[in-house]
Image (cartoon, rainbow, N blue to C red; front, side, top):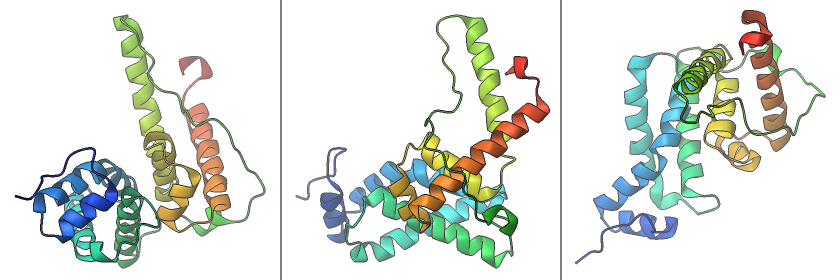
Length: 202
C-alpha cells in the first residue's frame, strides 16, 4: 500500500510520490504552497474574478511540469516562480503594467533595513487590540496603492518572509534590483501614509 504523504515529507519525497501517481501527495504540495500562490496572485492581479482561474492554471502547470523540477531551489520557490510568470503573462496579455518604466529608472539608493513593517502587537487589552487592528487596516490599504510589483515584493519579503535570493529566483530579478525596489516600495509607502494621515494618528 502506498504511504500517504505527511507534513514532514521532504520536497524530493513529495515530488517522487506525485510522479508515482499519488494524488494525495499533490494535495500536500498545494497545501504547502497555496499561501504563497494566493499572495502573489492577489498582489499582482487587480481583477478578483480572474484570480481563481489563475490559481487553477498555476497548479495545472505545476502538475504538468513537475517532472522537470531539478531541485535547484525549494519546491515552494519554484511554484512561486510558476505563479509569478503566469501572472506576468496575464498582465502582458491584458496590456497591463506591472511597474511603470519611470519607477524602474536606475537609483543609487539601497537599504538593508529592518524586515518588519508596523504590525499588530496587541496584548489582552481590547483597546490596544482595536488600535492594532486599525493600524493593520491602514497599512494594508496603503500597500494596495503601490504599483503591482512593489505590492508583490512587500508581500514576499515582509509577509511570506522570503529572502532576497528566494525573491530573486521567483521574479527573475537580480538581488540588487530586488533590494532597490523594496527600498522604493517602503519609501512610497511612507510618503503615502504621511500624506494621508497625521504622524500622531499612526
